[in-house]
Each structure stands twice: as C-alpha cells, then as structure tokens.
Length: 119
Image (tube, rainbow, N blue to C red; front, side):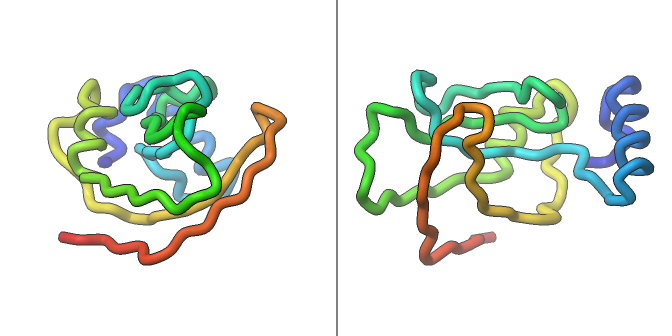
C-alpha cells in the first residue's frame, strides 16, 4: 500500500521504524491465524501495530493432526481488513509462512504443501 495512504501518525511511526531497522517494513500486512476461542473469519487488530491485521481461519473446535485445505482471495481479504485506509488492492510484495506461540506460551507444528498463487 502506498505510504501516503497510511494515516499521518502511523506513517511517521513507520518511517521511524524503517530508519531504525534499516528495512523496508510493509505498510500493510495480513496474518492468517488459527485462533482459540475466536470465530472463523473474525478480523482482529494486532495489539502492537495497525499495520498488521489478522484473519482467523480456524479455531480450537477444528480437528488437529490432519491435512487442511485453505483457499483465500488475498485481494478481497485486503479490502476487508484495510477498508478504512484503502479502496484498491496493492501488489503483493512478499509471502511468508511461519508459526508463533510466544504470546500464548503454546507450541505447534505445521506443514505446508502445494502452495499456489493464482492470478
């Protein structure tokens, strides 16, 4: 998302963070997550930065220990999560896959296969 589309205060914080880290930090990031008690498709804000927004794909009620298929329209998800800042979908600049349990104190294992990006 163009930096000019980011609200003024957050734009200044992002500029500071970029200068401090020496990295071109993204203006908008979507994290697809598995929640605990949250409902599927629930949108959540990151408690540390409005530049990151979450979308819950699964939760504790979903089965574990088996393969699951996910399919997402990244553009539609972006418009839903960042509608307060943008009405257009910016180009995808990066895709990362990871796991993080430091806030919950939990551990997890996951595998990814047959990842496809379709036009």
